[in-house]
Length: 127
Image (cartoon, rainbow, N blue to C red):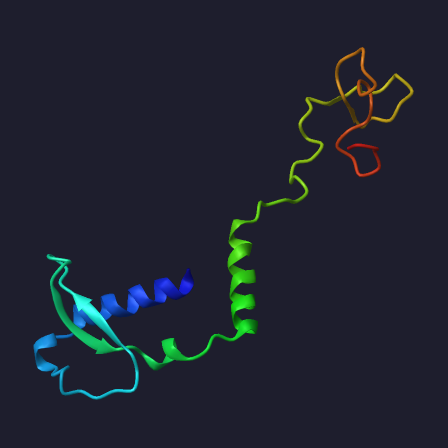
């Protein structure tokens, strides 16, 4: 995939920067494979050839392919982390004084185990 993009970018650069009429491809001897260049407006019309860059004819190193694949696959991972506002999704208020409990905010409601439990404190379980 990344190699294909490299090819496309290289040849797009050649097409945009070079005047192909200056090159005499028929008389050019090369040991490297040549790549055909096609006309942008008429894709069936061949406008010339250029030698393939040496870097693209070198053998692939498995360690580099593995490293690139590993790092590119990291782009599709799903994020996970502790929620920044964990425990703050309740409308807790302090009960104030006079109830013989600490003045820390407490979860509202009734009929559940969570109701009345302390919240928003590092000393509170679940808070």
